[in-house]
Image 1 (cartoon, rainbow, N blue to C red):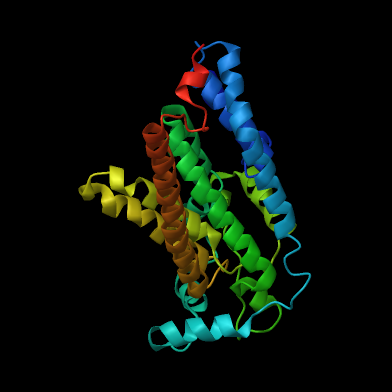
Image 2 (cartoon, rainbow, N blue to C red):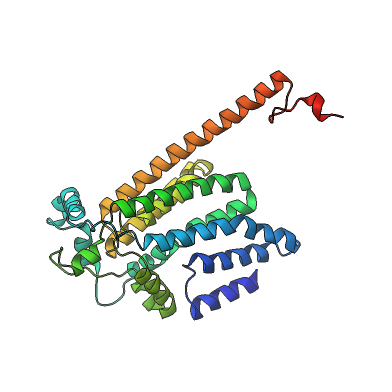
Length: 312
């Protein structure tokens, strides 16, 4: 495992952060191999079998998301008006992003800029890492996690096509905001000289759709990961876990990536996904239980084959 850590750090410094699904898949797979190096290779290949569909779907998601603004004009002013209506009383009539940058953004990098860059990057690894841990310890829990993951991603992707929305930095560039909004999500890496890390995220941002801001899946996935594990964690630790989606919210609003309304809609999507997927799982479990009960009453298997027919 120590060799894997060294290799990962070197890859981080020389190549960049693992934000691409295929590149992240490579590091996650090798991490499981290093963690369970005593197992035969046949066991390690099960990871590729289970995760290949996940990687393919993530790659398709990333590619298709880039075309989400090809059908409708991006929405801009209503997002600005929503944030001004919710928070203008406390920000002098400005959107929270402008107010935060006016009070916190300085020519030199501050500690919260560094924290914001780390929190922003965590979006690309937090859910994947949680999924890998679940795959290692409980495949049924991993499957439940992935069902919600795909449902949330699909809901976000459909919304990007139906309702393309511009973030604050885009609105500033195109003159919809009265002052300049800087896009500073990668600024903190400069403090450590990790320009490769920032460059990787810059490339990812340039390749992504600039008007796919509604809902904010960054905050949605941060809340999703926390809520999935919350029932299994002692309540005294809940504030620590819930601090993560709040930190992601501050990061995205402060760095010009999202409005607060994007965050709130993202959280609403998480709630809807948990309710709908949970209801679907309960319905499926009840259906299977009913099928099994009827099979026992009829003296048949779940496939309808009589027990006497199966035994020769």
